[in-house]
Image 1 (cartoon, helix red, strand yellow):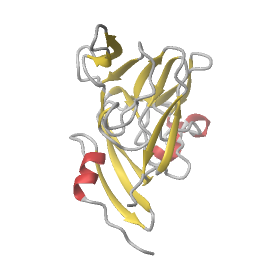
Image 2 (tube, helix red, strand yellow):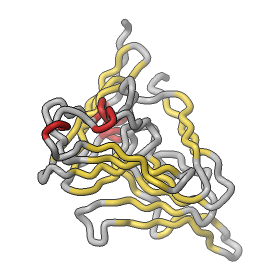
Image 3 (tube, helix red, strand yellow):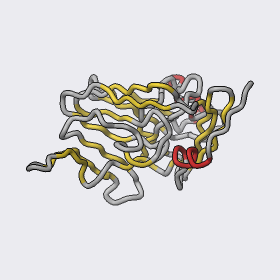
Image 4 (cartoon, helix red, strand yellow):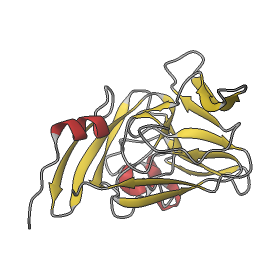
Amino acid sequence: MRTKTLALSTMLSMLGTASLVAQTNVYSINAVGYINVNLPIGYSIVACQLQTGTNTVANLFNNTAGAYKGCKVLKYNPANGHYDQNDIAQSSSYTTGWVGGGTMTLNPGEAIWFDNGTGHVTSTTFVGTVPQGTNTVVIHTGFQMLSSPVPFSGDLITNMGLTNYVLGAKVETFNSANQPPYTSYISTSSGGQGYMNQWLPGDPQVAVAQGFWYDSPPGATSWVQVFSINP
């Protein structure tokens, strides 16, 4: 197969963060790589921005060695306002797998709560291909958990193309190490002759493999992100 090489600066801007490290090799027309994700004790909002084949919880968080005993994942369903849940019970009978098979999906553009109940910081590695072409994330009215469908880091507006928002939309990121753990952003407008839309206190900042809460007023239907490694 023909091999292409990505410029180092492109890969650093796409995948490089202090806590989430990724290395990507490109074969033929696909960018194949991995993302190492640190999972702190307690809750974090996690996203998988690679196509891994199935993108199920059991595949992404492989518990065959009991590494995630006591952990659980929760996925918010905006249609009913409730969480779907997969977990690994503390009882020894579930040390090698997720209760119910771990069939919950975590596709690019989605996000979940990961509750690390192991008592120590742990990690996982996502391996797959970077989504290319036109990637569309459906936006519902009200609350939802989202992520960039491509592993970018930085601000959601400039770096990740979240421009189809409705004034009054809100973004909340979560970091359990911060007090308070939530950082909130809201889209608003400045009046007068220099009328313009803006986010306060600034464009929302999101890292690779990090999901976020998004609260949308009525009107927005999708977040379209176009990405290609090809000239």
